[in-house]
Length: 253
Image (cartoon, rainbow, N blue to C red; front, side, top):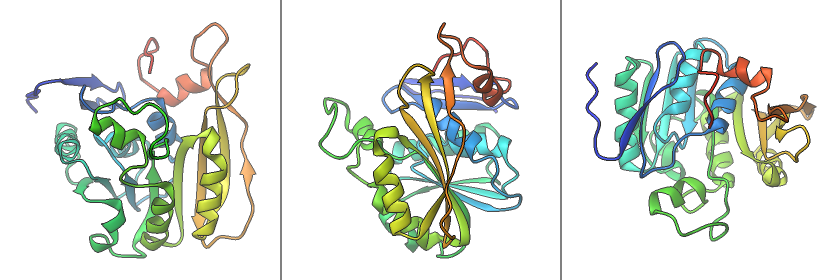
């Protein structure tokens, strides 16, 4: 497919199964958290229907298309320009039949997707609460980073409505929001079943969490071993190289 880049756009070679991604410098670009989430969610069952809340440029659906055998992946995004880019990314990778991108507010998604029909949900949501952190950004980046259009409680509420019984939700979030994440999941009967802490280095504090929860499941939380991104010398750990698969070893996110 011929690639016609627009102003401020770049194309990123994901180095996995020939996948590529168009991104716009004006918008929030994907980082290692999206890569870690897609790997964490690789246990999604075959022939299932998956929804990605806040899909951005479609990076998680595209990575999941390689890491899973899901039948259909639906990306939900509120920003119209990101929706256009995500759809182009699906076309660029010949995934139009597998990946659908919907331009909608997550608060209203039950009006479009029938309740109790989704097998799994993945989400890399805005990490910052509204009116906190750095706010001298473009409006597009504020929406991606701050809970101005959608907060985590809303994500849990809508996830419970869409998921089938025992359906799964996979979340990446900031470590300092752990209590908020676990509380809201359980409050909406999405029982946390698996937790993994992500550390920049083994000598540092965790900065990310990966959580899997199951709708209407019984309480039992398994805590996996810590995931460390960098060795003390600044090189990626072996596990991170394995997660990236064929991605270039000198790549930094």
